[in-house]
Image (cartoon, rainbow, N blue to C red; front, side, top):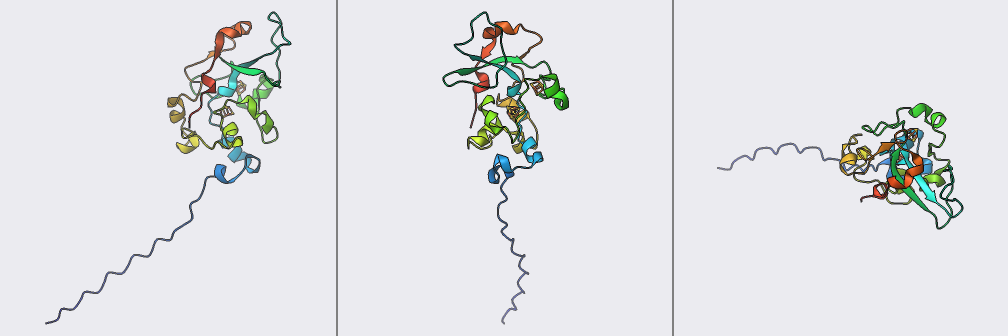
Length: 186
Ligand code: SF4
Ligand code: SF4
């Protein structure tokens, strides 16, 4: 006797292939980003809160240190492990973010209008990486639900490595020159 074939189960609706949605930093240039997108790119490493020094031929050893916003060809920017006194050395956040440029006139505020100043930022700075076409680093908080743990673990922030500028004599800056702020990975 012939068996009656059971009716086939209704097929599940086919899953529609949706095109991959790329993150904004892969599809927009820095100039095209919204203010919110721009602000979210900052990894919070605080390397930009370190004091940097440029040794030049014009300045004598006994001259006072002078702030500058330019670097001549052939001069080298040296990083120190001395950070701004307004930095929270545990969170690596600015304790006076809203008033930072009033309280610290030398505080570099990178915006979409002064992107050329990005060279003042360390090589691992996300703005500099994107500007130079090097992409987002794997440890960036945006790739870790906004958490900074991966960045600290990768050694890309200043946490645990700094002194404050109200604790040291800046005229002895040579004793505090370090190379770790120049480190970058992937
Ligand atoms: S170095 Fe760049 S990414 Fe890091 S805290 Fe400063 S501005 Fe943000
Ligand atoms: S004022 Fe704040 S953001 Fe500016 S250098 Fe100091 S700690 Fe960093």
